[in-house]
Length: 552
Ligand SMILES: [Zn+2]
Ligand SMILES: [Zn+2]
Image (cartoon, rainbow, N blue to C red; front, side, top):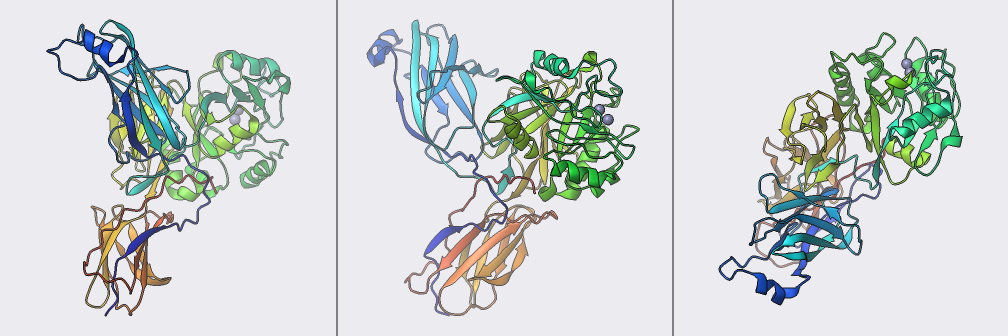
């Protein structure tokens, strides 16, 4: 055999999933420089000559010249030291030329450390600006660093981050009744009903009266919108239909009602599972096309039992329907009177407050459900799933089996997947048990890290991917075979006899789950013309950024 391997590698994208532009982050540290308001000389005049020559203010993260990984959240950490009294009064940050300064939080473990989470930075070059107040009797000290945000992911897995799109979280109610409902005698008329929610800080509501659309759009303004909708009410099960513009007959069977709700621009949410007119796990698995299920309903969820039964139903339907048909979870009031308002809601991340934008975000799972706490930030940070809650006592991470993977502090918790998880969901939990529930973060294999060397007749392709993933190999479009990675993610594939000439090895991993979602591929090219002798090519680890495809 006389082909000579190993000259170049390049990236091949073999993704069949529909993709949308994605925020992907690579942080590299550019030029960092001190821009002391009082200048170096003034600073030197204040400094104690015996003190260490550390700058009083230093951006310690993001740091280093290399990539720090993928995600829509970036931890910015600052070290601020006052060598006179040890205490810095306040640290704040701004980005680029923005004069919106945001306060950093002092680390509970180290009073000299301050941190903030940078949410949804756009790809490109940015300047992080930091100010500290009360440093060595100076009123303010400033420093900045230039970083480059790029589209690169960093791990053997890709996390499908439902919160990757930019936007703000907006509080909304997707299930409530007005006096227009037959059982709404204690409710308010539609416009008043909507405005009562607005007064409680909601930015949108769907009034879901039984089989009729109440849509008081006269209440809409720049800070609040009502969206059309109704609750399809039948003994075969209730379905709320936010955004629907016409009412389907309640006499039709559930699947037909779902189909017609979707056809009339609505989303179909299966209401109050486990209630006497509810849905069973069998219904969840049998029905298709619905968007979400209610895991908490202020009217029907038994306070003593909580949502555990509904969460188990949701877990089962997620595992059964898989990534391609992922189902979201919502919390709702189902209020029939003002006292029942504000028990369960959704926080929807959308770039603007419009019916279309809110609908798109709900359909794509860019929301979380809550009956109490909030997430100050949630998403992917440096390849881990990160969450912050200002009002919870703990952040908990669960996998596809309902196993508690990790419990962390509400100030900032990051769970870095092992690669064995099919999906991970996050809860923020208050001391009294009230909870915010994230949507699942699904995992799939990134492009395998791979290298190859010649064997007597062919080649050995070895590398690293997700534990248990099957790596498929082809050469110039000819499928060669596959190999399953071990528990540590390592794989090694021996090719059959290969002919002379150029070779182009293509490797793609599919996770051990039935989803069989195709990830990005690695392409290794061996040219017959290059003169070269080394037998092991160290391939760059070729990566793709998180994929979050609109739900199929
Ligand atoms: Zn109902
Ligand atoms: Zn209802």
